[in-house]
Length: 142
Image: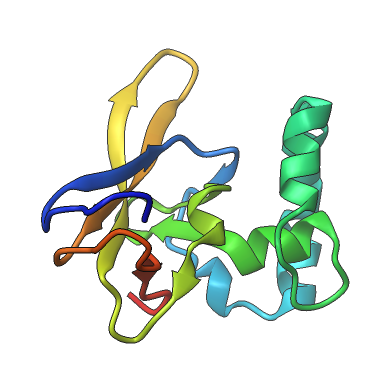
């Protein structure tokens, strides 16, 4: 943190960069990589190709677990709103480190609806006081 942050302070409110919304409840993070690739690669890659070059570079700069593909980076960095069947990459939040004793909370929340799409922002809030120069951490597991 660049300054002291009081408990309950919103640290970040971020819009999704790359997302997918499903008709049915699917936990994409628990799917086998190959299964996800077979079922969802084409629509996700279309969305990736529609991003600006700068946005594509941001996605390509994220961490990966398998082959470094867009699919791999999506699965490794996405956050979910399981109640709404929505999964997305929020690039700034994706760079926040994990701690089992996290000092911040994160979640994906429905924020608005337009004719074109629904908007789900991800938010990070200080769970406790975070001192200047202390690392902000979230718990990836929930």
